[in-house]
Image 1 (cartoon, rainbow, N blue to C red):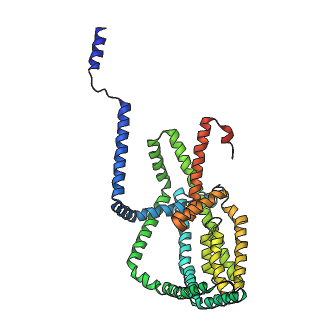
Image 2 (cartoon, one colour):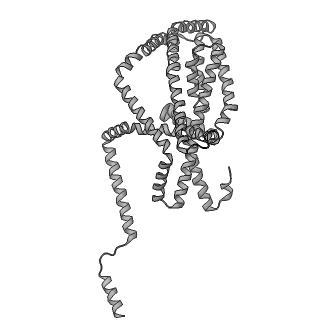
Image 3 (cartoon, rainbow, N blue to C red):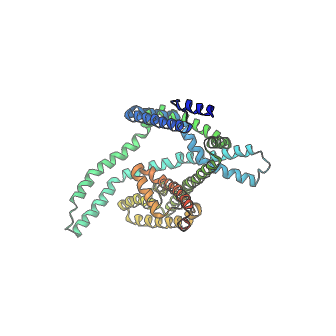
Length: 400
């Protein structure tokens, strides 16, 4: 008994007693303070920070481009692999099937790029030249139409519109002439940059090929890192969530890209058959803007309608009817087959994603706004469902 009292007395004189719980809290607090100091210094010296980030992105650009290439080509490579495994290449070694699939995928993409540079871009340049040359005729046509409108409705004041047109015509002519005339000098003056871009592009292609061919190794390393930092339960949940988010994002972008390519090609073929001018230029516009849900068809139809209204109103009506039929085919037949329920978003959220994305990030934001909002909505829904399960609110949990 005396020994125990002596130990208690001695322990009472100890000024500091280690405690694992409070030590951990102190370490976390110090780390948070250190991170806040670093963030504050970065914000205070924002010009240097911005220059460092830009320089880092420039250095890492081949790897970033390689990640994008591998991300968008991976589904095509997987399609070829599955096709070969089901048919002629059942006895081939898996690595041979992988390399042949990668070769075919890159061959198709590079073929599309070559076709675009050899056939599409020259046609677009020729269409721009024709439009530039026809600007005076368009002006005369619009001026005549405004004069007739003024005679029919004298109460309408159109002098301001006429003056504005008189100011715009020389600017449009100069703009088109400068675009066509400055292409070759610009390419010549940027030869060093072109060489650098080509080298970075080749390097990005080589890195992307390695990423696709070794995707299992990269996936295994990422999983090792996740399970090293998290428990097995949380690691499984994180891997499953990332896989589902990737499916939503990639399914929409890839399916929409294929859908827009088909719509653009159909538009070009139909316009060529009908005999409408500027078929390639307007088809490219229609195909690109078709990537934007809901608003894309209207945005793509506006330039063509305006151009034809200034040259031949009959062609404007024909073009508008053609676009309407084409978009009905896309919305009722082609789109559901390719896209399905890739996002599952309510139309209100789709419009919200396009509006906010376009306001903050321009055209690119309008393209990727929908899949980004779809991923965010999916994550929020998973979080809400988990909380409702914990609270055992089944009625709200099962409501869709």
